[in-house]
Length: 300
Image 1 (cartoon, rainbow, N blue to C red):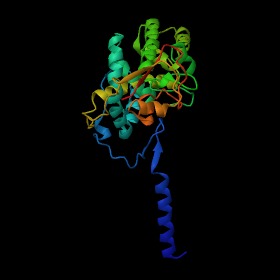
Image 2: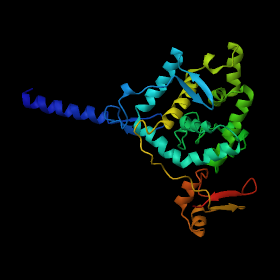
Image 3: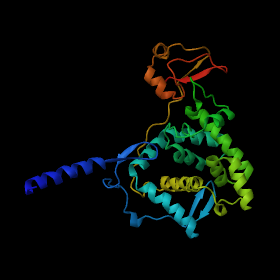
Image 4: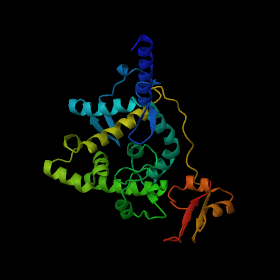
């Protein structure tokens, strides 16, 4: 192979390698530039660090313990190396946090619980590999046990307001059992029966003392770290812009079936796309007669 052929070969090989490294998938299925091409808007990693304590719902997690600090720093560094994903968290928070905050005030529950669905779903109508769906990632049977309708036409796990109140009811039950919001969050991830079994076997109900499965151990720290990043996002150089809050004022109560959702939308000065975007819990192009008194459909 002569020098010219060698140069052409090396050039082509570099193109192949580059194209194969352009994108990677986040845990939520969204695509961002690879870490090698990301140009962080915030300070260099070497200048970033966590405080001596993290706090969630008024409960402190001391990071003076080296094992706890290492776990917290893992979540912190993994989060801040994905500025695109963090920016989506901040933007989507503008859309959903007003709903969460209003529900938490009505239920007299800590405001910090609004960070739980950020860790659960990235504030996106996600579906997990285990068939958990929606902002709060309910499994079908758990959703039904908290009064959410899940069938071929309707999936209220995708209903922002109804799923939020169902999740808060679930969390309240966990707090009532363990008298700790850290433990309520852990149980939300792994199930309260499993958490009770771990507590009984290890003879402790303190989160910091429990040896839990890796997913749950990371989950609670992820929520606490996400809260910390949200509260200091301007120090990290992120802008304040966010998506507007959900439109929930213009609604129509429907007491009968809707055979053609597109025609129904036009009759109400809207569009099929608008109805589907504002009501993600509607799965089909039609709706059967309501099982309860009526449907509440947002028309924008």
